[in-house]
Length: 604
Image 1 (cartoon, helix red, strand yellow):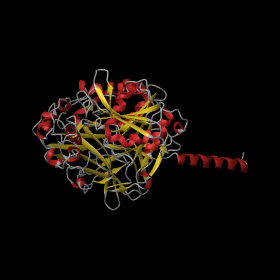
Image 2 (cartoon, helix red, strand yellow; image 1 turned 180 degrees about the horizontal axis):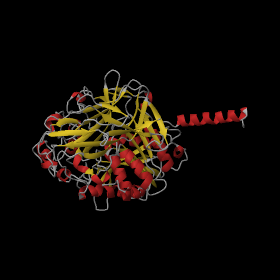
Image 3 (cartoon, rainbow, N blue to C red; image 1 turned 30 degrees about the horizontal axis):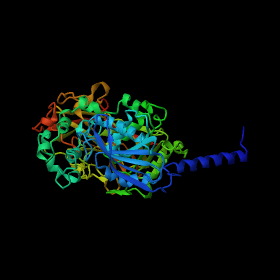
């Protein structure tokens, strides 16, 4: 028998302790040493940058007052370039030139405004190269910014501008049928607000809600039929693109293909390192993990195939809150994000070896545990895909029903039934600027008979879930088309039912060749009362600790209104033209031959 000496054992313990400390220090995005904010800033507003077609975009330039050439950062936005001035000044003081630009057709920039014109791709390329050629630029250009500004970065990077060296897309959406304006084929209502706001050169009050500039009852406003007439009934300015959005209701249309970037070819065009950030409750969440995994596979260079991703407990306004309506995230929820971004740019634009390339590529905040977790990949390699099966005696309607959830496969069980009436849709929680601000108690809607509810027994130990969520649903409808919506909920001992994640799917977008998965360019038909298999990838995963004493719940409905525009169940080739709602009788199966389940990524 071979034994280790005390010295050897001590050395091993020391190594393990050192590794543990190093891992702990890497659990959230550490700033470390970054360029100091010591430089005076010179501001040069309303400069003009020429595009290849002759249009001139208005830009503001923030640069160190001292002579010399500096790396530059581009912030290209349709929301008024002046709004980025505080962030621009902060980075300019650290030795960067920051250029904020109004998108084509917005504010004083020339050209015609269309949110999804392919011209935005070439404008981004032209802006990067124009910046690189200026006498104050070192020739290295980065990009950063949130939401639509994140879209601009992916569109630009897919065109491979030679001077682009790194990007930081924050809460960037994916392509347009995976999130907005269509979430797996279902129109999200906050994009109606956004379209009104953005229907002119300047912000335009078209209501309802914060995007429209005044409070209007969304529940009533979105009932207008047909949907194509929203632009005439809600004070939109005349646009050509609004009706294109509504009439081209699959990704097969030329309009959507022209601006798409989530293809292997476009990802291969991205030659630069990417650092992306989002929040678990960001309404544009799916873009960040989709891009992370795709860049690892298709990125155009070795550096591009090593993406970085940060997911916090935030909604669309990242890194700005320690709590939500029904949760407290603790003191670690907010980090020095711009400090970490500066460290990223110091490495890739200034060439400083600051160790950021040795950081774990993934940082996620675990709700309930209220702590950051670092990982080497996404999905987390240690996560175990675990099926939670739906069970009932045929009466899972509402939280008072007999629906249960367990890891035991079903045997012989009757299906569950509910009625979906488009004139009485299942209510979603209220939302402000387009984002359900979770975690939020959603127990009220679960009391309705048009919601099937499946709840686990009280947990005897903690269950930590981090990563993608996939559902298999066997279901039938009496209508020619309908929607399926599934939600993951954490039920607290005090009765609160806290919304965490969801998956949705318009039935006619299922791909029969791939187990009923969503296919953005499909537009099939349904045979009434026929059972179909659906594979629903939750667009909003989770990182949550279901604590001992809690219960795991899954809800199913066919609407969640007014967050999602109602499906009228009419089966019309284009729902935007439909005027007659159809009541649908829905059936969900969960037996041994048709097992319906939700697969959670469980951390051992």
